[in-house]
Image 1: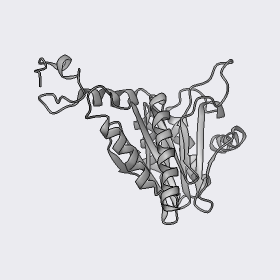
Image 2: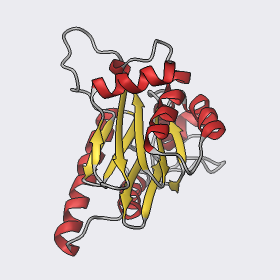
Image 3: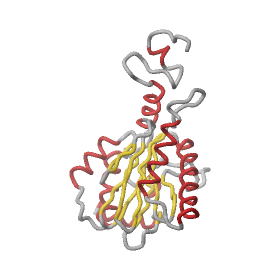
Image 4: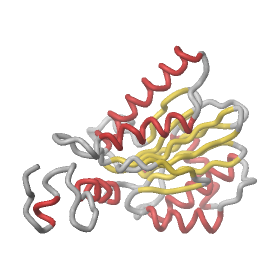
Length: 242
């Protein structure tokens, strides 16, 4: 293999080359792309899972809902994303295929952990081949099964970690501070929704509105992914601010 010149400028030219201190700079750059993205979060309790994301206000000429930050993967699984949303969309299409293949092959819904690991595997592959770059997207993948509620994070390196509640993106630290302070495993669904809105309210600079928030729930009793309509979001926001 040809020698790549010293200094960061040399070692960041190829994804397959480690720097002398053991870093893959292209992976770190992908992590930085996520940090510059809008905040997304996930919370799970026995009552179910809530996924929420900060949305950039759309212009007058943009169709509402044309840009997604929260994706449905299967009936019982969804994901919130931060970073390069184009990268996220491609990976979510792969995730949906994985979920459908599992139903055809095993005649049962795919386990949340299996799906999260599959997406993590795809991301990891893109850190060790020349001619490609890492995916600049991080996900919080949540779902409900017969055995309970689950929430997993996958980052650009391919690492998969389970959480009770977590936030990603530019305002993640502030949102995590709220989650750590107010999270309770015994929360009911309405309380989880309010906690998610409370965390986003901490990071969104403008007034909290249905136009700058996207949210979905997966309730334990139904095990069905459902996005909240603007009128439902408005009711919960009024509860938060009252």
